[in-house]
Length: 414
Length: 106
Ligand SMILES: Cc1cc2nc3c(=O)[nH]c(=O)nc-3n(C[C@H](O)[C@H](O)[C@H](O)COP(=O)(O)OP(=O)(O)OC[C@H]3O[C@@H](n4cnc5c(N)ncnc54)[C@H](O)[C@@H]3O)c2cc1C
Ligand code: FES
Figure 1 (cartoon, each protein chain N blue to C red):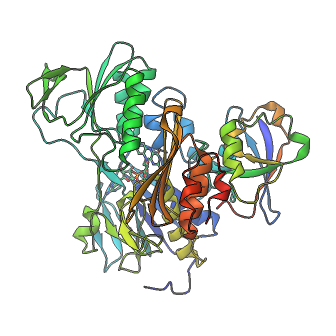
Figure 2: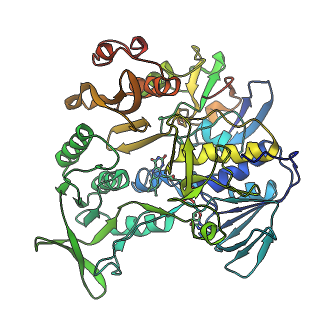
C-alpha cells in the first residue's frame, strides 16, 4: 500500500463529484487543517446535498432545500473551497496530474478525489423515454416526482428496493395510488431476508399499496409523449400517471476506467480510499472497497460509507491516523417504521428472528455459528445498536438468549 | 435564533447563531463544528450526534422520544445529561445553550 509522503497541507486537491462524499471530503479536509486550495467539480447545478430525504421527508414536504444542503452556500467561499457546478470531469491525464472538464477547462492537482457516485439504472424497454418515466437519484428528479404526485394520481414503481418502498410510503402519504412491480417473487430480494420482505409487503398492502410480484415489465405505453400505463408480459396494462424506475444503480467510473485505473463494479481502492495511483483517491458509491470486517471487497451505497471514506481521504492527506473501520450500516424510514440494518449477511448460515413481526417491532439476525454477521431491525434500536457492536467485535452470542426478546440485548453475549 | 456553544471534548468552544427550527445537530454540521458526526442526517438512527446538555437547560430542550431513549441506552459514554442533538429543535428559548461532546461518537 502506498504511504503518504510527508503530508503537504498546502497541496492542491481537486474533487470530481460534488455529492455527499465529495462535499464531506472538502469539509473534513478543512476541519483537519488542510490549507491548500480545494476545487469541487459537480455536474449537478446544486452544491452538495443529502439524498436520503428525497424519498422520505422532502418528498412528503417535511424538509426544505436548505435542510437538504450539506453546508450553507456561503460556507464554500468562507472556507476557500471553489465550487464548479454544472460541469463534469471528462478526462484524466495522470502523468500531468490534470483533469479536463466538460466546459473545456483543465485543472491541475496534486491529489485527485473521484467522488462521482452512481447513477440510476434505466430499463431498456419500449416507452422508457416517455415523459413521466423517471428515476429518483437527484433533487431535480425529486422535484419532477413530487409534481406528479397528489390525491388520485397513480404511480407505478418498478423495483421493490428500499428507495421504491420509501417512495411508495411517501406517495401514499400524499394521497396517490401506488402499485409496485417487482421482477422477483418478493420485494427487497437482493438486500433482505424473506421474513423482512413479507413484513414490508404486508405493511404496505395494509396501507393501500398494490404489489405485482414476479412481474415482467415489457413496455411503457403513452399518449402524446406522456406515459399512460405499464404493459406486463402477461398482456395486462396497468394505467398510471407516472413511473419510478428503481432497479439499482451503476457506478460512474468511466473517467477512472479510461485513465487505466482498476475498476470492478466501481473504482478499486484500499482502506485509505486510495487507488493504485498514489495521487488519486476514490470515495462513496463509485468505489469497490475493502470491508475489513468481512475480509472482502464490495461496493456500498450508503451515507455512512460516503462519510467514512471522506474521512479516510482527509486523514490520509493531512497525515492523521485513519478513522476506525466501521461496520457497514443503513437505515430506511417508511410510514412509522424505522428500519436499521448493520452488517452484510456474507457467510451467514442461519437466520434468527427475535420478536414478533406482527407487533412491528422485531429484528432478524444473520448468524455464522454463534457470530452475528448482520442484523435487520424494525423499530428495534437495541437490537441494531447492540448487533452492530457484536458484529464489530466478533463477540459470540448465546443463540437461545438472542432468540428470546424478553432477555435484554445487553445479556445476549455468550 | 439562539446562540449555542458547542464544546469539543478537548475543551475547544464554538459559539454559533443557529436559526429557529433547525436542530442543535444541524447547527454544528452546517458550520463544520468537529465532534458531531450525524451519519444519518437527523433520522434518529445513528447516535453519532450525541451531546451532553448542561443541567440548567434540561427543562428547555424538550422530552426525549422513546426512540431517542432507546438509541442512547446503547450508545457509548452515556450520562444522565446525554441527548441526541438532532432531536433538539432550536428556538429563542435555547439562546445561550451549552452542549458538550463525548470523547468519540463511535
Ligand atoms: C432517493 C435516495 C434515498 C437514499 N436513502 C438513503 C438512506 O436512507 N440511507 C443511506 O445511507 N443512503 C441512502 N441513499 C444513498 C446515498 O444517498 C448515497 O450512498 C450517497 O449519496 C453517496 O454519496 P456519493 O457522493 O458517493 O454519491 P452522490 O451523492 O451520488 O454524488 C455524486 C455526484 O457526482 C456527480 N458526478 C457524477 N459524475 C461526475 C463527473 N464526471 N464530473 C462531475 N460530477 C459528477 C453526480 O451527479 C453527483 O452529484 C439514498 C439515495 C437515494 C438516491
Ligand atoms: S444524526 Fe443520527 S441520530 Fe442524530
